[in-house]
Image (cartoon, rainbow, N blue to C red):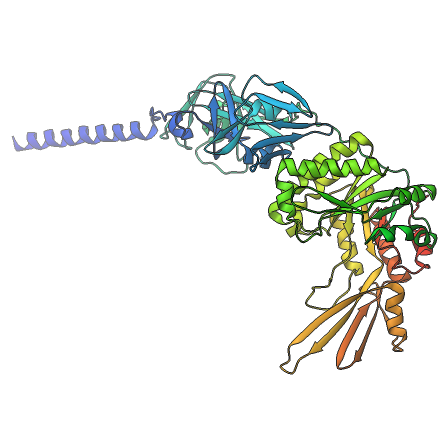
Length: 569
């Protein structure tokens, strides 16, 4: 009896073990039937809309209203089209094309193109919690993007990168798209034969024979590779064709001089100064300045001056600066009504005095004002283009912390981008140094031609230098000051003291140093040789347009050097 019981127990144990193993194996190798709700997957509520950017689900959320998808303005500007501009002061959205300024009031379907009014079939800009969102159909009309929207839940799949190609495949046999690379992972979607998927993270090593893919409706997950057909690459091509910006380009090298006109009497000096030059074909008098925070412009423009210049075969590009210390240029440019007043006034002055061009010299732009400055250049370019007025914009040399000047966009919308390759060391510098060393100029050439076509660049060089005065106090504190000198004046300082400069091949300049009245004086000269070295650097970088600050500070001999490199005729 005991033996029989033991056998029964043993048999029962075997059955239980087999059952457990069967259950374990069934669990291990049977795919999960759990389904993850897409609302949970995309984390959307109510009118929110998930945003899929190429093959990535964004943390951003858009909105879906009356069948129209809306995306936050800042995302549109950052990724899709930087020419959308939001004036947060006057609550207006602006978009500029080569010949049009489009203005959109929020929460309406009406907008203006230049001065004409028109309507869309939808509200173009919505303010949601005081944040502007733009309708994607409107964005698509002006941008190299493609998108599709889907519901349940609301989502938009946006393609905006067009470089290279994408790896795609089609489903060979019905299968499941799962949240993770495991058959135990929840199901995201059923994939039917011939459904197309695109591979994601193709460099990622994925275990278990899975591939990471995205479906056409923006669901990213994992599918068994064996369920897909052989993959292939597809080249991406946008349907959008960007408008071309026409530029006024001279059929000769620009040889420009700035003429510092401090008052009306300065205008009478033009011909005497020009008579000492050779090859100058453009003069930029410092006539205009932003005079108040309402967009007003002060002017000492002179009609006779322009006539005399034209009679001498020289174009006149009137300069406008932002040097008035009572003016907050950020305030002026960040208010559309004020900014437009400034733009219209400059065009009015250019037409009134028969100017050939405008030269914008705004040197007090801060990082937070960058987008407003660029919008000013865009809008002014439309007005200049329609009136045949050359637009040139002065800039410091390109460096990373000044990228808000957006040299690329300037090169697109303006006719010429001027780079002031001087003030390497300036009046406020804490250490003595060259105003414009050869390395400084070479860096400027390289950095700007990486961003702007060389034939649109005007490289500005100095006709001045600085004499540095270094004193040491009793406590060992060093004080550095400087004074600006023209070419002849600087040479006179040295000759009066019988100081002979020596050539510094690294700087591409003559250098001199002397002691006087317990102070050490240092100077890096600008003269024929230093200017020639800089001109070599320009032309080697395919830049053949040049400007000089300023007319009257140069030695006459300089012009023979300039004419050897700049074909100004």
